[in-house]
Image 1 (cartoon, helix red, strand yellow):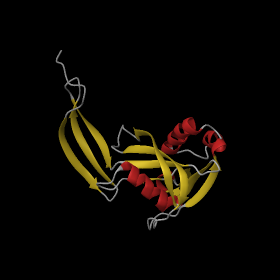
Image 2 (tube, rainbow, N blue to C red):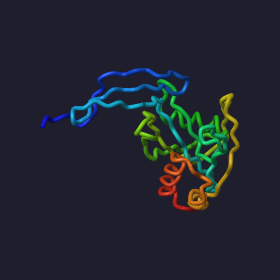
Image 3 (cartoon, one colour):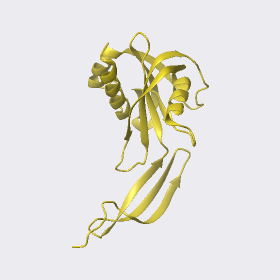
Length: 182
């Protein structure tokens, strides 16, 4: 039997859609067994999410409507990393745009693929503490309400489905490992 590399070499790529936030392509790949197959891929720039915790041990979450979910979601602040921008700088910018604060301490939590079966988006998660007011203009198409949730209520909010997007669940649970459930 012929040995093939552990990866799937790309034989051809066909662009399907190029948008403001995502691009979509179909790659023809060679599988480990030598056969060809296709992969539908959504290309998305790297992104960040931040768990902001105030001096009273409240997490500042954002409530906003998400069209793909057709629902209002309660989430940690998040956003894209601009070309040439460091992940930590993007985290500080998003905090100012979405919750009107900056962080005295920004602690990396982890980084992860959001949906590696079909999307290239890689997200960096941070914990933000020692918050102080600092605002930047928000995006014109974002309508955000800031909701303060006591840190010790977060597990119940996740279990009840009040917090139900993957980036928020993962980053909140990681932050709680560091902070405890004060």
